[in-house]
Amino acid sequence: MPDNPNQPREYDAVLGGQAPPPIDGLVLGGIEGVKRCLDSNSQEIKIAALSDALKYGREGQELLNQIVLTETGVLQWVAYDLLFQSSTEDEKQNLLQHIPLQSEAGVDYSNLRNLLASGEWLQANLETNEKIQEAVGKKSQTYFHYLDLIDLSQTDLRTIDQLWVKFSNNHFGYSVQKRILLEKGWLFDEKRNHLSHLYKPNLKDRKDRVFDIYKQFGWIASTFESSQFTFEASPMGSLPMIPGKEIRRRWYYQIPLIIRSDL
Image (cartoon, rainbow, N blue to C red; front, side, top):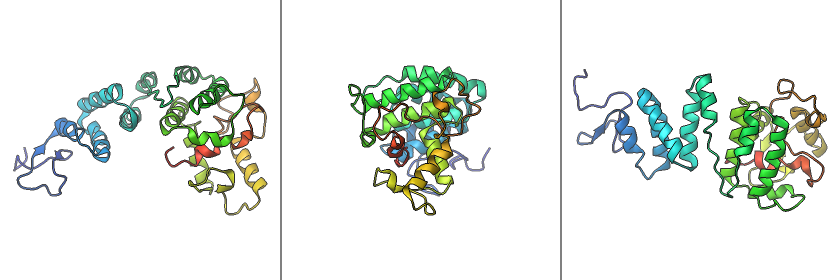
């Protein structure tokens, strides 16, 4: 028992945000303090509160579960990610069935989820292409230009990326591709959505840059259209990628997505 019961304990939420708390400030302990912070108008305070929720054991997990089931947008994704990261492997498998499938364009991503859950990676790659075309309003066309991808909403991009990341255990996904390129010394100019503004200082020639990316993700070989494709042998970050020849400038497909700061 603490000497002064009016002093906050470790992990307790203190209204007013001052440290140390004001003498006349209201101290909310435990999970109730987290819930009170979730009523804030500040997104940053809400996200911080969600991160604190797991410190309160089962109560915190139940609160995060409730957020996943009832909220939308960034808050839902933060709650889901926190639950996923703190779960056992068996719990993760159950959580994958409830992964958020948000879309600002009204796209149904349930079939993409089912294909990834079944490990049908190449079929999921084709489905990803079709769903992106639908999300950017090009469903009725036989092709779309790579710059059309700028119109893909953050919500839809996040949904597609996290489906790939979660079901592949961080082996596939746009954010995985972005992380790998950053680690390999690539630099992004987020104000320009063009391959010439994804660059590597020691590679001056544009063809050299393109070849470096292809080689990194194994896009040079035709294994992605082959029945010999296996998850184990595929380079990390190799999927998703644009399939077929009907897409104009198809090798530029990922670039407007990878360089986005909201990925």
